[in-house]
Image (cartoon, rainbow, N blue to C red; front, side):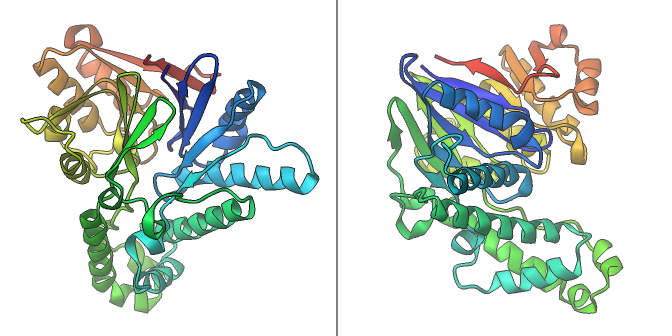
Length: 364
């Protein structure tokens, strides 16, 4: 048995993988979405699992952006409140995967002090989001430790990294292959952060928010944990906000690409809410799926029309019928339907119902 439950996370990510058997289902939670996701959507989902006698074998935070992390912070806060009150926990958690900024990109401690200065003096720019993410990630780790939830169990150096753990992680009938980040990814991103901070030293030193607000918007992305999940012969590629070039390199290093450098999966969780900054047309030609899941509500223009167009055009060119499951109808999904009518271009586009907490994809 293998199912994916796509939770309504608005402009963030949150989904559950259900595996095991119908008689004894097991669950893995990936990301928790932005503010309000837990209260309105994730908490009812977890309560329903607990009511069936279930628990979470694993919670995975792909990376420390608040549109992925806040719902998990809310979950940990709820569990701590339950413990303080002496009441039964909302749900049990057996483990947490989460890469801290320090472990992943700043093992020598050189970047974080500079980034905190930039974030403090430049609250109007994207660097401030990264600073908040660092703090939120640290809070999540501390909360998990206080609840005695094992963190990154089985991984050397407290870091989820494809190079350090090439063997699959097996949970009942579910196999997780870590395909990112790699050490090369992390080294490249650390260098990008250093270069970005070097380029903005003068603006940071000025302490003038307007100067920083007018600086370029090229803040490097944070590294995502990316995994290929497989159960009963079906596959889901979990991408976080990962970059397509990093993902292809990770898939190649793991030996998951065929001789043509391609991979087909049953479900592809489209990275970074469908942003065209994280993917290319070539990526959607090489990594194909039967179903593409897009969690976005139009914030920051996501999903980008270009991303949707690339997915549909590449599938059409290959003669593949595909499904697009989006959490929300947005200007770009409306434009896609207008410019490329589904019946004429071989795809089906569906959305979460307005009052639903989540949509279920039954894979096996």
